[in-house]
Image (cartoon, rainbow, N blue to C red; front, side, top):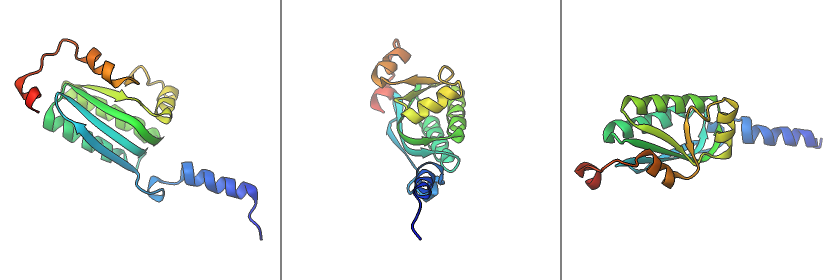
Length: 151
C-alpha cells in the first residue's frame, strides 16, 4: 500500500519539530569561549526540557568560578527553543544577578527571538545582535583589574 502524501508530511513535521531532542541526535552543546573579564559562552542545538539543565548548570559553574561582570550567551546556534528555554534564561538571569553580573543574550537565533517576543520577554532580557558594541555599552567605564588582565 503506497504512503499518502499527508502521512509523509506529518512524519517530517514530527521529526523536525515535535520529536524529543534525544530522538534527533545531539541535543545541545555549550562551550565556554572566554571567562574574564567577560564570560562568553556559546549554545548550539535544541533548548528544551531535556537540555535546559545542561545550559543552566554550565553557565552557573562559569559564573561561580570566574565571577565575570558580564555573561554573554551566544544563542545564534539554537535550532529549537521551547518554554523550558524561557525558564532556563530567566534562571540564568537570576543567577547572574546574584553574582552581580549582567546577562546578555547575544545574536539570538530567529526561533529564540520569536518565542521571547511572543512571551513578551524581549524587554525583560537583554538581547543584542551586535555583541562587540554591547560589551562597550555594558562596561563603558570599567577598568580592568590585574586579575582580569591575566585571566
